[in-house]
Length: 287
Ligand code: PDD
Image: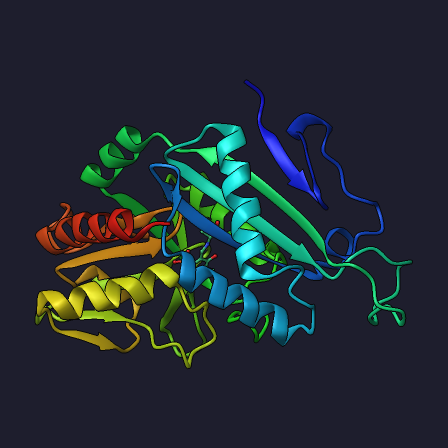
């Protein structure tokens, strides 16, 4: 069965789905997006992703295209039509279509909406998590509003490609003070030499990861020590463990940074346990 996309009010075969050539998302990256993990056909961390969507839209003065309840119906219908149980849902909301001009259209236009659904092979994902992955580092070169989840992802795409060319799966951006900000599509964490979990605070220019936020809850309930404090790539290498979080990766152990091993170079117990606890929580609370 072919994939089905939702585009501006209609469900269409994905191969035939199209947007207008003057869609501002296409021409100016004037659009935001969200990605939900799907467990058993249900949206994980639904509330957190909706809240961030509303915030991203508000920051850009794009109206919410429909109520949360209506949007939930659209997302769930897209999932149903694609018959995906384990996977990802992608939602993009843009300012809309207007003759090309950098400033906003004077007469309000309808926001554009696209929804796509993709299946994920959970067994393959678990196998990858059991082995751990490598990351590379790259100088931070993004704009100053990485808290807004826009589709302006060229630096992220280039960083990810550089990672792939070096046999790694993620790139960590490093700021001018030498601290890791976040990954190209994930938040970055370590278990430092004292056994304390560390991830960058969200006053920094990073995305406020929804998986990150849920995991902070899981960690506190589990009684582990956690600090929202930045770390350097060197600290990551000498840490006990490292991992990344995101709707696509969930909690994914990192075993090397720029080719050097993290700790003893093996997947550690904390990251593995947190992956399990996060997935249990996400499955149980998915809607
Ligand atoms: N990326 N940081 C960046 C730059 C991201 O793009 C993402 C998510 C995250 C993690 O956020 P969350 O836990 O809310 O997914 C952090 C999505 C999955 C993507 O671009 O596909």
